[in-house]
Image 1 (tube, rainbow, N blue to C red):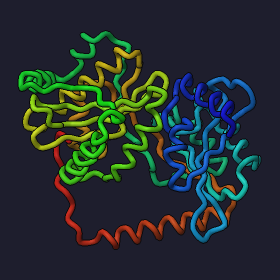
Image 2: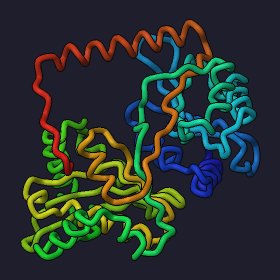
Image 3: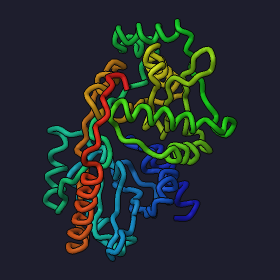
Length: 350
């Protein structure tokens, strides 16, 4: 993709009503070290929101002669109609730019429910099949177009008390520049490991958080927030990414000391409040992986959103079978490797 094509595509993503940071070229740069290559599947010229298009991440698989294509939170299309499903499928099947791709996976930002059924039915007729989810199906989204007083009143009463308790305990929230503080992500990674053990959620290498921040920071779309006590000790952390009208919080965690003083409640509220001040219109709390985490996020208002999940389209019949078989074998290997390990306890305020 040329620099001009990348700039035009990123502008389209940011302006789209369903724009997501997972469809930007910065995200492709984050995934490139893992073998993913970016391919643009879109119409010519300045497309309308109703014209389906996506950045497809393509990765060759070991031994197999086929690649897997993945439209993370794509394609971008609004509204989702049977006609949009037909046009998107036709673009994938015409073969341009997809040589060697045996299977395409997508997890569109299409909310599940009766309104989605016509498009889903057409996708089924066109050969799409439900797949294992790669991104969170359920999340909470806070509408930031209301004024701050309305947002505050939408926060559960007990949660507001916890926010004020943290303030009274001297907790402060600050925007951290990891370039100026080289140990920032060491602290971030340490807290994420502690959170993973306590809440029973997956952990990533510290480099994954650093790479995400580094990819989006030059455009001013990444923000690192730390909640600290009066001594400067880090109690809770959040990594935020903005894309157009939406701010997303893909990663966050807290220490045990932070839980004691409710630092995570103040941090979450400040993230929401500051995102609104910066002009964002939506705040995506990004995933409800456990009942405890869902309960914690519910207290900050907004509405719960459930998407239709991941869907697969076979572009090569034999290739699709081989890819699915390889994925199933990998899942079995992971289960065997992890057999006997005790599961971490869940924390209701992770």
